[in-house]
Image 1 (cartoon, helix red, strand yellow):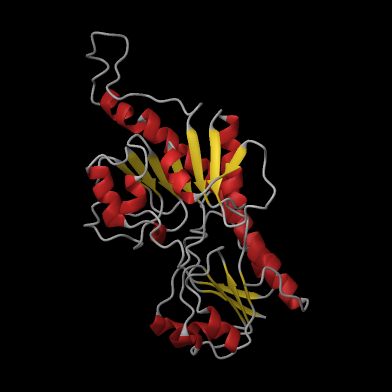
Image 2: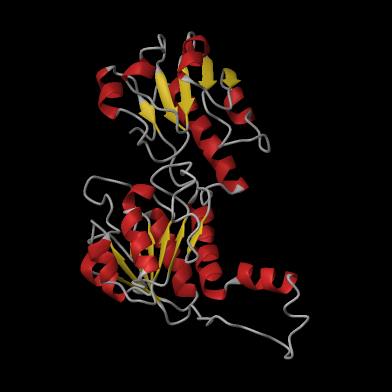
Length: 316
């Protein structure tokens, strides 16, 4: 079968193998694809793989023989699901590949905000330690995570793993989830969203973006948080009203934030959060460990293999 990957660069810039997928058909991989290039690239493609490339009326009409679409990610915000369904084209995504990678990034962000590692490294490199009259210096309070309360907004696979690691660090774990009847460890307490905002020392977001939770981080909820609280977002940029967060950081409503996702990606150079002294911004990399990206491509291959056997797994 003819298999085309339209925007593979962010999944694999060249450091891992496509062998699991290429063994299933004639695979053609493109780093990126524009609308002008689409007709030529998909004219004989029966299976189309996309990461963030949009599948909509304009693009799908240029894929004349597509029989199956695989999203090389979990989120499907870039897919017109109703359109794909109306065309009877099966669609699958890949789930669970980035749990450990995102969890690691969450705690890397927390420790960076609490311990200011990068700040102190920069100060040492400037020669400040060498000139210090004492054996050490610190001009920012250093908090320990043990005993702090971690609030988790969205207690799915990643959220529950983050809670598990937080518990191991001695943190109190509270969470808000739509399914409060789901199994959970004894150390996790499900609470109303209002309590989550009020009680969290650190609030981390782990939910898909929906109409119900769009810009859930807004002026009202930020005002209810502790002034010492930190916000971590590795989920979706649309969960945060960026103007309200900037105001909250600028006026001391919360102490800091670490954002791996923004509403516009890549961001406009004038986005004020990018350069805010209280805001740590990384370029949507929480999911992108080498192990996670290998698992992702293996998941794409598993979806395609199942389709070739007459089954659709991980259907959306």
